[in-house]
Structure formats: C-alpha cells, structure tokens
Length: 317
Ligand code: TUI
Image 1: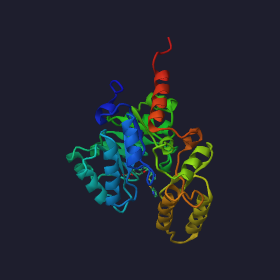
Image 2 (image 1 turned 180 degrees about the horizontal axis):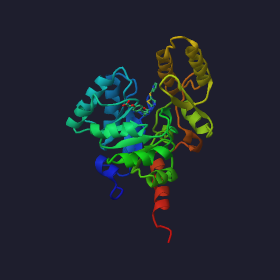
Image 3 (image 1 turned 90 degrees about the vertical axis):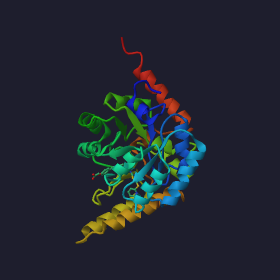
C-alpha cells in the first residue's frame, strides 16, 4: 500500500490507480485483472440491464477476492435497478458518471458502499461532498467519452482546494509521468481508462483496440457540443455523419437532440462489441497517442508505479 495515501486506505487497495469505467468495454474480466494487480478495477454498467450487470459482477467475484467498483452511468434507463443490484451484491465502491447520484447517495451510505462521483466542475464537486461522497474523481476534457469543458491541469487543483475529501484526477493520464503530475496538483490518485482499454484482459473488440493503438494525439474529437452531451472519440466516418446530423438538427425549429443521444449509445456498442470502428463510436481519450502496446493490467500498473516512484522519490539535493 502507498504509505499514508488516503485513496489506498479508503478503498483498501495497494496502488491509488483506478481503472475508469468504460461502457460496453470494462467488464468483470478487466475489473478483476486490475484489482488483482493492486489497483481498483471497475465494471461499467453503462446502459446494460440489471441482469447483465449482475453477471459481470459474478464474473469479477469468481476471478478476484479484492475490492472492485461498479460505474453507474446515471443516464441509463436501468439506473435504479442497477443501484439495487450493486447494493444486493455488496460492491465495495461505486463510481458515477454523466449526472448526479443524489437520488441514491443515502442508500449507498447505508449499505457501506463508498461513493465516488466523477465530476467535471468545482460547483458539482462541492455538491457531491455535501451529498456524502467519500472520494471525488475530477475528470478533465482530455478524457474519452462523456466530458465536461475543463482540462485536468486547470480543474484538479481547483477541486482539491474546494473540497476536503481526497481527489482522484482523470483525463489525459496514462503513465507514471501523468500520475506524478496529478499528484503535484494535489490529487491522491488517478483514474485511467484509455490505457486499460488495450489491456490483454480487456474484452473490447480487437478492431477497437487497434484504433486506440494507432491513434495519434490529434485523432480524437468532441461531438455533441450542442446536444448537452459532448463526447470525445476517435475521428472516423461515424463522427463525420454525427456532425452532419447534429448540424441538420440545429437548423430545425425544434432540434431532436434525444435522437442524437440514441444514435451515440447504439454506436458505442457497434464499435466495442461488433468491431465496426467506421460506423461505430470509438470513445477514447487524448492520451491515445501515448498508448502504444497491449500489455497485461499488472504490467501496466507496474510500469506506471515504477516511473512514478522514480520521479517522486530521492528528491533533488
Ligand atoms: O460518464 C463519463 N463518461 C462517459 S459515460 C459514457 S456512456 C454514454 N453513452 C451514450 C451517450 C453518452 C454517454 C461514456 N463516457 N464520465 C464522467 C462524467 N461525468 N463526465 C462528466 C460528468 C458529469 C456531467 C454532469 C457529472 C455530473 C454532471 O452533472 C451533475 C449535476 O449535478 O448536474
């Protein structure tokens, strides 16, 4: 365990590295691999129905005795049933995304489940602290998927100053240098998605992994700036079509943004499960350009920690 580290203490893990919840991508296999390697693995519930989420939890439990998290996507039509499942299964921690978990916070507390909301802004972080959040994940717009407007570099120290619970930085972090930088900003842990996406244990389609491995730093773009749900993903035929439809909708007197949200949700599945990385949405972060190799979760964590330790121990004089 990292000495004196609050995230390790609260979550009972060895290294303060949390694997980001990735809808249709991070299942029980990946979560268990990350937890077995000393981090905190995360099953993403995404838009999955409760029985599917329960299945992923059972898979993780069959592969590890270590704690792991479930990420609850608050826009899911099954959100309240998924909350029931997580409580029944006595999961160690819940991370939440794409909204406020206020309706469920009391139930998580009661069940002894650590509540870790992902937030894109200071005001939301403060609200989550009042709600009883145990840890806050501060996510910059370098991240893949559904994002806010601020960068990790600007947002992290501002959230660290605004709340008294420990903060985990996310967005744009994939190695020991990024982790050390996040700690310099006051974070006590990091959440990493994109690099774990290409882990050997990650069951995402090979075509999806190949897209991330091949991507350069300039290859992601944000769609949905006008729908209220901006999403970062790798530029492809889908993003081009999505941008065209979004522009078309915006010309209408009453734009149908729900149509675009549905299109996006279906497209993530198309890319991650079916491997159609041209017509599907390949959500990934700006740090994709740094992610070059498929490794085991344990190798990824070891490499990150080795570099982090090299950079932060010893001092300069
Ligand atoms: O949730 C994410 N990233 C995601 S979720 C996702 S699945 C999806 N599928 C189809 C369409 C859209 C998404 C893919 N990537 N990150 C965490 C995150 N949460 N980013 C931003 C937020 C957020 C936004 C608003 C959190 C809270 C919030 O408002 C809270 C409030 O009180 O209003």
